[in-house]
Length: 124
Image 1 (cartoon, rainbow, N blue to C red):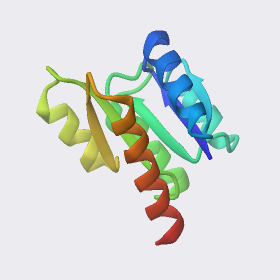
Image 2: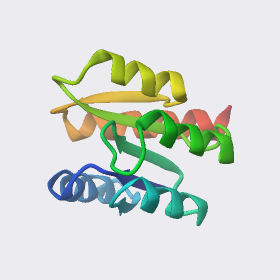
Image 3: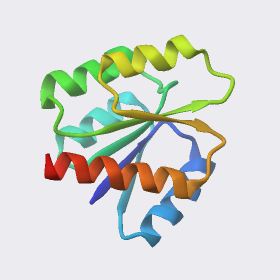
Image 4: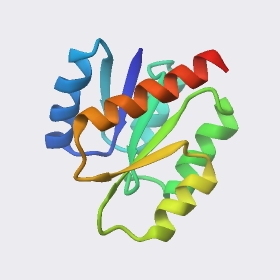
């Protein structure tokens, strides 16, 4: 399964890349929303893990474009800093994100959420 990391920054990308590859996932990182959308349209993602502060689009527009083009065929997990505004997280969830985690988080928690969402998308 392919995980697309969007707008998380190089340090977090590297940490998640290492952890996710250990569990057998293929990981790709996108620099910004436009890069992410190109990779999604090229079929390079089975699940998306995105910062709520992705560059290039407002979060709701970014998620809206994914949902308009692909419906709910790809799960989306948002990553928000612990001090993030609750409204921003809620807007992302209302736009069609499936789940969120607050940073800092334990990488094992994110891996578990990815496994659960992929299981639900494949089996339901």
